[in-house]
Length: 281
Image (cartoon, rainbow, N blue to C red; front, side, top):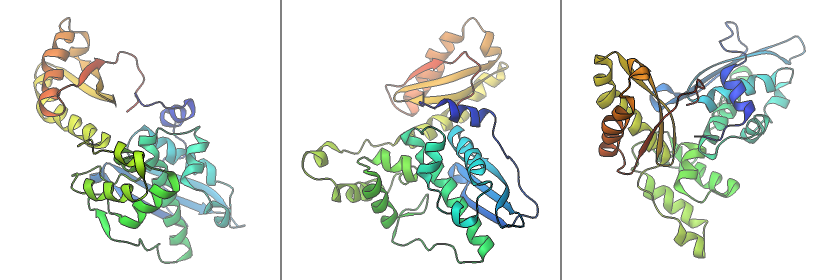
């Protein structure tokens, strides 16, 4: 499973400042539900031009919710000049760190804050420079180069984890890899190879297979299944409904769920059942 800090879990399970401010002074929206992550941030200023309230609506994973919740707590009481200095690293640090595959959630928070401040000031949104490389998530070559150089990213998975670039159709993998290669020399360069499928792509294909190939059969018998997490080649799921108490659940997991995921996703996947009550995606 993802190695979440206790603070990430706490903000995910008990998010602060959920919702929107109707008469907000600043509004920033980033991402899209179609892409799997979306965030709307609103804030209200007091008479001293300090942020007195901030609220968010997020569509995404535990890290996206925790990062958004943390951001709203961080900016309350700040002037806009102070708030605009907050970076995605500050958000991750506030939470005690984020898994490298989830850093893009803190980036999304920083970008939503930048847009919300721009909307209040009436200034044009920051122009994204460069040529779009990842068309699924609108990430340019300059953005990838900047992330690779400033954060010492060395693999395609690391770039996807930071920017989401390459996490969609995968047609841009070669181009992203060539950008990474420009900043890696000697033995390091030879050690970097395309895996063929990023972690994000693997998770999406698992989710799609569960929805289309596995859930319909379980629902007919009053059962259901929920994807909890993916760690390497291990898929953690939670059985629900009649499946949760069925004496043949282990057979269902191995002979139906695991077999179908191996057929549709990766041949060496292993499915494990989660029986605790933690809901961490």
